[in-house]
Length: 530
Image (cartoon, rainbow, N blue to C red):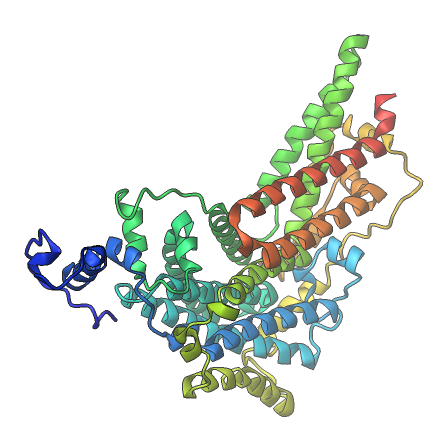
């Protein structure tokens, strides 16, 4: 990469430019020739590359126009499949909860539809492709860490980010399929874990503030190894500071989302699962505190108790709604949408425009054989899906419904969700009165044909059902949807205009919704203060 710059093993001290060019150089040109001499004889350190603005060589295998389009297109196609299966009712009862049924009016009576099998088959092939290409992309990037530029390193990480998001979407849509085919799931889980760990390691340099500066510097060919030196040596090219908060937040969201999706395949929402115990334990603590706050006392203490009760009620409702959204298909799809939007926007905004276009970008924008092949490979998932549709193969093929999967689907369909129509006649005090009495623990109605009990098998207390059927719950739910939409717009449009303004805007948005949340709770439960 640096063939035009020799790097000798020894260097002699030059005290004056006249020692090299005696009697030939005017004094005004001394600094110019001195810099030229240093560039020729000095070793290629990260400090020199930073000052010398060494240009980056083209990397069409990473940032070629066909490669970028193939990764982004496959990711959004998989997202579209997940959305279509949700809206068309191609999911099983165990994949959706009462939120999806009530607010989005989705059904689950078409989970065995032949188009459902076709879409599952296409998603399986897409995720297999992304698993192989994602691991190959990061492996090649680590192998060329000494020569690959920071900009191309960032592009490789963002492509692997999209590849990982495809697997998270597959875990969401093919939850029942993986449970029915554990062998197929285990080898996939090994590959996904390898890609996830490699991606976490590759994301470490992106936490540096200087990484963003060199990523957007299209003229700089600084090798990615120099960024890694900043992590280990404070003196390397200045003092590094972990100020790229957007990258740190996105990495944390990636870790939580991955672990949450994988845990959903290993543990069910039953009385013995850690999620059930965590949710029920927190609810019991808050309910106990609210009962104490409602106990009669003197007038001064009674006023404080009402304030205490209203404050805990805010946390209680927020706790219930957050858990319900996290356990819903729509909530998981929102998180995946924000992740895809973040990765896609960084790829789009990382390409120079106008006068910033360089020879390197022109070389990477050419449609070579490798770029065309990357686009044509996207046809393979649809070819496999169409073959299944035409042959109508029945059995244990991937994407089809085997006898084992059919038994799981029929068992989950036998469990009906909680019917929770809106009750506009109930008084807001009903919930407070219900909390004064000890509520029995939620009981699970086991089905002998199921290993894993979904959320629908849980019998919730009366006050929880009242909350879910209330107008307040509906208002707060759509307010959360507005938050998700705002976050997606921020990540897609503003995220690459600078980290600090984004973080400040996020704080403003969060404060706005917290104020709105508190207002609705206070308005609905205003009789408590009387």
